[in-house]
Every structure is written in structure tokens, then in C-alpha cells.
Image (cartoon, rainbow, N blue to C red; front, top):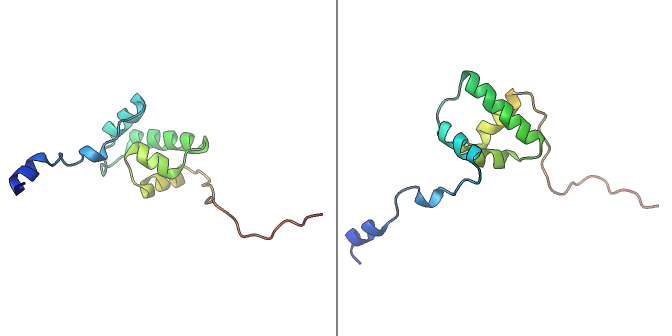
Length: 101
């Protein structure tokens, strides 16, 4: 196969990175919040409120970042700015073992 044939067969950039959205709301959020675009004013307040509501109902920061097409750091900052008390990290803890009686 020649280089020209290979280039012709190569999928468009981003085709493999665009999973189907599961709801209309997620698609709307992704369309209105292009990655890297500045979010200010009322749109920022609404986004912060939506993220806070979803985080408080159990969604992870990583899941919210993927859903909105934003970075982990952006979502973390938005939650912190909106006054959310962030959950601790998951996994095993290394505290003292409970006494068995």
C-alpha cells in the first residue's frame, strides 16, 4: 500500500474520539461548551450549579469532566468556586484496625 492510499484510508481526525452521547442534555452541553472556550457570566453560574448538583448526587469529577468535555482541573475549580465540599479519594485506608471483641 502506498502512502497516498494509506492517507486516503485514514479516518478523519477526531472520529475515533467522539463517543455517542447518551442524552440530549449531554450533547447540548458539549455543543455549547467547546473545549477551551471561556465560560463567563450567567453561563458560568449555570454550569457551576449543574456541576454542583451532579457532584452532590454522586457523580465523580472525572465523569463530569468527560460529560462536559472539560478538563479535570476545570471541573475541580468550578466545584471549589461554588463552595462544594469535595469528597476524599476512594480506595483502602491505612488507619488503625478496629479492635475485635
